[in-house]
Image 1 (tube, helix red, strand yellow):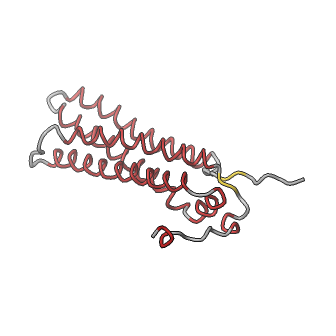
Image 2: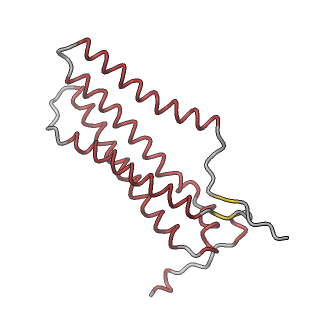
Image 3: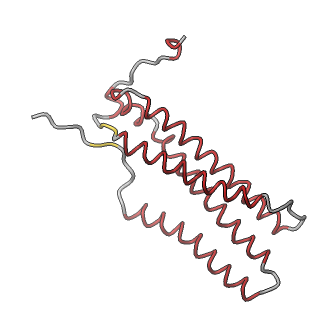
Length: 176
């Protein structure tokens, strides 16, 4: 029954003459998968600290970590599926596939970044909650945590606005 699942190769025109650097694409997918699993694991570990009390800060910490676990897990699994597909396609098909699936190839990083922000915010709120007895330590921790979250956004903004967009395509070899 494999022929039932077989699809004809994508037309080369779908990639506009560009060729995917499969190694760079797969490396990016693996890197995103691994780090998303790590951050998701940290967030999951925080959920094991105990059942939240019925206080807004407890529920905020818990929910931020739940969302982080889901986003990071989704990022990790999506990366794994995309890696398997990108690695398994025939050389003639990968460029057309990557051109047609650019939005899907961006998804693991988007979910990973959102999961990281939720995790970092969860840590900030967890620290605020746990340091209620020491306002000075609470303010120092809030400053450091806010700086960490801000640095994520600042790094993204700097890279987004000062660099060309990510591109896994390379120019086709010129025939002489």
